[in-house]
Amino acid sequence: MTSYRQPGILLTDRRFTVPLDHADPAGEQLELYGREVVASGRSGADLPWLVYLEGGPGFGARRFVGKQAWLSRAVQEYRVLLLDQRGTGRSTPQNRQTLPLRGGPQAQAEYLAHFRADSIVRDCETIRRLVTGGAPWTVLGQSFGGFCATHYLSTAPEGLRTVIVTGGLPALDTPADDVYRAAYPRIQRKVEAHYDRYPQDVRRARRIAEHLAEYRPVLPGGYTLTPEAFQSLGILLGGGDGSHQLHYLLEDAFVRTGHGHELSDAFQQGVLAVLSHAAHPLYAVLHEAIYAQDTQPTAWAAERVRARFPQFDAAKTLAGDGPLLFTGESVHPWHFEVDPALRPLRETAEVLAARTDWTPLYDPARLAANEVPVAAAVYHDDMYVDTEHSLRTARTIRGLRTWVTDEYEHDGVRASGPRVFDRLLALARGDA
Image 1: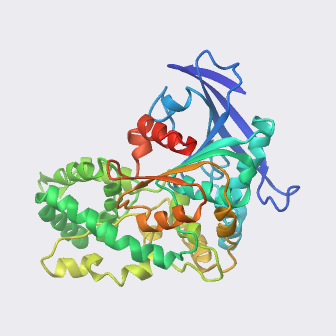
Image 2: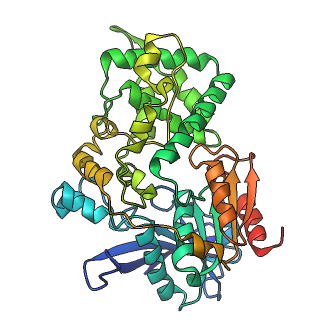
Image 3: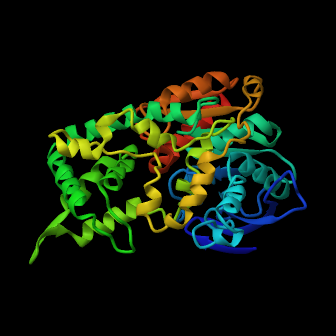
């Protein structure tokens, strides 16, 4: 293990070996990476452990610098493990470069079927026994990390001391189609709120979309910016300052050149930073699979359900005079055509979309008998996770205490972490 320092903390690189398939512990193995964090001067202290599960799917744990965000509060009493979930970060990363080693699309899809919350939780249990000596630990789950934490409560509550969920209480038995039926109206509300704040962006967005429909420019690195891809910038609207980020991006879209108005280099680079899946391809490949629990295929649910909301159709919007609606928190087949990081994985994604033998992720009966202290932040009108779905689940989990707030958006624990973390820890302990 390698240790090193940042302001106020000591970091240690930790590596673990786990089975690809926990039902076959002697079979193929994966290497997982976790970054242990402890406050300076407390490295030898007997501290309880907290494991952090990042949102996603497909994102490695956040790379903090010193005592940023919620970490500043956590290290006051915990030894923290920032775990890169399997396939992300430094944990046997999976992308267009590595997946061909598995074989063709069918083999790749079979492999990636082991990268959902159920496998992540069993990874955590393997790691917990190694680092805590068998003692239970606290889990902090952000967004998809909260989905994992809910599965943890369903299958291995004996490993849990406390659970804190931020913006990540999943619907327990809601198919992907219903997830997106609830999502599109929420997204529309976020877009309308953005246009109320920045009415000049209505004209700007239409002008950009009209330009894209005519020219279909290819961004640096090979990303084809279509009107539909441009609409995906709405993913920003689910964050605390996302509306402002989107506004600043739109206002720099065009420059005057010798050939007329063209998309500026600054705009192209900014768009690419938001839309490219190069750093997190599993977000796209496994996005709908995180909702799959029965014999019904997800079958590109977001794309099919979107057809029921014609106001999101860019071509129809541009043929009329209405505002262009952005989208977000949805993955579509065309993502695998426009994004060079995803093109080689299109057939693999098709196989996963057609898969029908998914296993259940949650056990309502066991959750109803829960004895683990649990607290969850539920963000009012969260764009990424439906508030009503979350509250329904909260009522299912015995003893869970909720903090419903409109003070923060989905990234509350990241943006204003110490306060959110402290409030939820007090809730879980019954101190608030």
